[in-house]
Image (cartoon, rainbow, N blue to C red):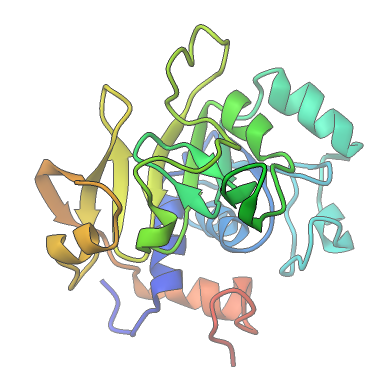
Length: 254
């Protein structure tokens, strides 16, 4: 535990980093997932390999990339390939262990909506769409979802399935993996054998009632719900001094 105060975003970064293993190959974008991967690589997973969506393979950026096309991603990269090859040769062929996702809605079975709010033909809001999210959720061996915990983001069923979670017939359709964890600013949630989300750990100071109030269905809790591990001093130092010193994604900065 750290003697320093930490933000909700820093907690989500450190908790996401703990989900990554030393030999993982991770498809990375920018923002919080990028910080989580780089934190894991600097702590418990030095052999983690990052493949950025733009096509840099085994990147080791020495500064925070501001987009997937930032030239800093070429730093120390093993190779640079077209984006098409990154998705076909690496992702669709099953070479990616972990993919990070987010969206406007996530339901109790881990389905993600980033397409429309409301009816598809007459939506209240039209969103950016899939990008590569559907391919990631369908082909990575594990997916991690990072999102603020708000009731509008957690309906019982999404308005539109952009990225499939534990949909009926997932294996029969030839989809790999599935969502492994949902990391929010209130809790860490996992999935049971039936593919339904449950609360695994609660963040410090967060109650079950607070999580339930921010969730659009009767959420289940693990029998042995524990407290989410908090960042230590070294993790906070790395985030604030090395990974995001200007607080672009964490909201801090010098």
